[in-house]
Image: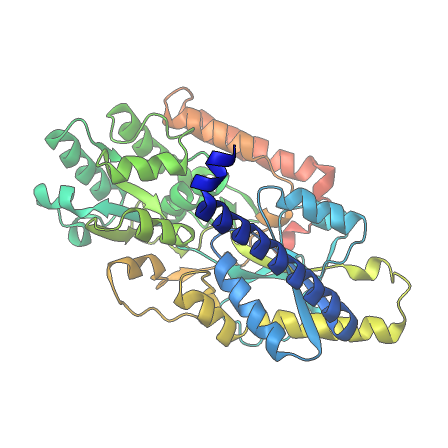
Amino acid sequence: MSDFIKKNTYLITVIFFIIMSSIIYKGYKINLEKKNYITKEVVTLYLKNNEIKDGIVEEVDKFNKANEEIYIRLRLTNDDFDNIVHTKLANEYDIDIFEYNGKTLLEKDFIKPLSSIGIDLSNIKDDSFLSYNDEIIGVKYGSAMEKLMYNKDILNNLNIDISSEVNNVDSLIEVLEKIKKEDNNIIPLDLSLKGIHDVFTIIGTMATSDNTTYPTFWNYKTGEYDYNGLKEVLFKLNYMYNNNLINHDFDTKLQEDLFNDFKEGKSAITPVNFYQKYSVMDRLEGMNLEFSNIPFNKDGGQLYYYTYSRTLVLANTNRTDNGKSDDEIKKHNEAVKTVFEWLISNEVTGNLLEKDYNFASFNYEHKEKDMYSEINNNEGYIHLKEDPTEVLAGNSDMIRKTIYSMIKGELDINTGIQKLNEDINNFIKNNSRNKDVDLDKYKE
């Protein structure tokens, strides 16, 4: 043992120094936070620990150093975000601003309207809001645009020009057939429809040209879910499936596997969005890439932002006063208001976007810079203004499984469409969890 120590003295010293530095730094941060609890009004911000992490840490640090009256207590959590936030809200722990994560927050009265503390939303002019009946309860802080990503080297070898050849789903099929004919070992279009939001944003976008529906299949004219416009798209996806133009494991394949296939040249085309931009730039560095919007089934479609966004909401601290006086509550609400408005300011959202940490659609003007900038191109994209999907208790398993079965030919498409129209609307209307949502308010 002593010989080992003698031979590795330098290494052991370095490791010891790193460990001690980490302990000292952590102690410093804890003491600093304790000090700020005493001298400043503390506002707690809970976010998921993902691509926004480094950028938001930097911005919060700048805020805390510059502001003498308010201290932002930033907490970033991983896969257990939902459980942590729900537990803290249920037990009335300090939490002020956090990411929306579903219907339970409304049922438990865990969130309150942004108007309750007078938040100024005047700089948001593109409907980046989450509405609950007549109330705005959140701001869609981080959005994304779904794109198709092409391996341009494969396409160039086939003399395929994406900019002129992919105008709709039919022309996409023609490109896929060219790829398949040239090299049977390449997956022409590699898909992952495992998540409901990928089903919405890819297939639902294709179908917007065939009905007055959002990608979520909510019909904003009739005020119900309507899958009739999906019929033609499903017939074409079934054709792609039967002719091996898409991967047969589209319903189970993970995003990680899509990246690996694409990087290794096993696939020619795959979907990506802004949330994955860093991975594209980092892991696919050196590849010759091209991007385009998701094609519509026919002319007349509408581009919508990815149906899942990073949406900021307010914790309903009014459920209990926690022994605070009216003046203390007023002072704290003013601090929360200041922080929320700071978060959605042009300065902060611009700083985060500049380094691809977050895409706030309400503060962006597309300017082409390089090959990857097309991932940021939001020209023609709009938000789902009158869509209740995020405030309803739905049945994503039923939607996904029925659509999978139709694509695979296991279920007749006409029968499946009728089944979805009946079953989903009955589920929504008869579910007691949805009695609080006035669906008539979600019509254009």
